[in-house]
Image 1 (cartoon, rainbow, N blue to C red):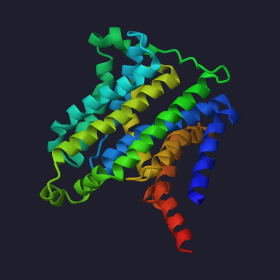
Image 2: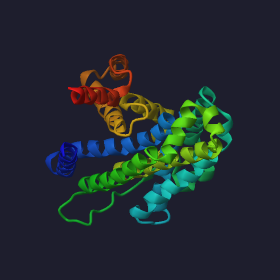
Image 3: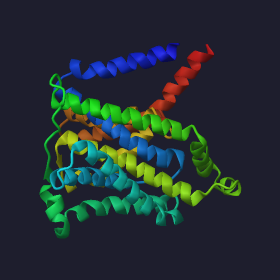
Image 4: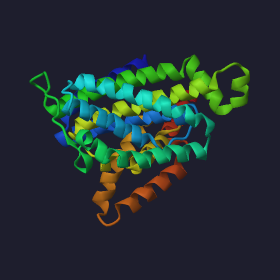
Length: 312
């Protein structure tokens, strides 16, 4: 009963938020939802299957550019461009995951890091400039809300919220079902998992594809949110931010991705407000302190507090 009441309270707060907050805060809240989807995709790969990736910023950029090109050149509606971006990233992630099966640990991390380094340069290439806009990028118009009572920022918030709820529900069912148990077995006991008949190559490649699809969908939503895409917006630092968000939120945690997304969206702004000269130093100190106090992430602390209260 208490759990249902808490879910209803959170749902009501989410629905009321864009009407109570300013346009900038609504934009930030939408950005947190977008990043949480990307972190959820990375967490499925790193947290649940044990494959370390430093290249998910590339899939984020591919998803954003796919949506932008379809909107700007193919004149597709936004609701068709978003799933198209996800499907393309699913195919690219699966294709990249197959040869990467021979790599593990830091070797896989370096391979994905190379993908993150190469993607912005590929987007700037002269052969693709007519599609991607080169270094100037692509300027997009935000979709018009079909409901007159909502502005563009509020409408995008609700669109992102619906997509996020659907993707979180799908991920929850995935990790708590047979597939999730297989992924955890591959992560923790690969030899035993193989001996039990789990098709490790197929599971790993499929997980890579699904993870890339989640991140690509987030990239498409980010393109609509900002109204602009450029190669310099998807450097390897985006991949590092994603990994930081996953660790801060909590490895192998579904709900923790929301905490991690809030951290990587809000803290840089707070650090800049404290000091314009050294915002990244403040960011680094905060990250170190957080990891010392919460080695299992914010979700780990929440679980520990909930367990202590239930025991009482």
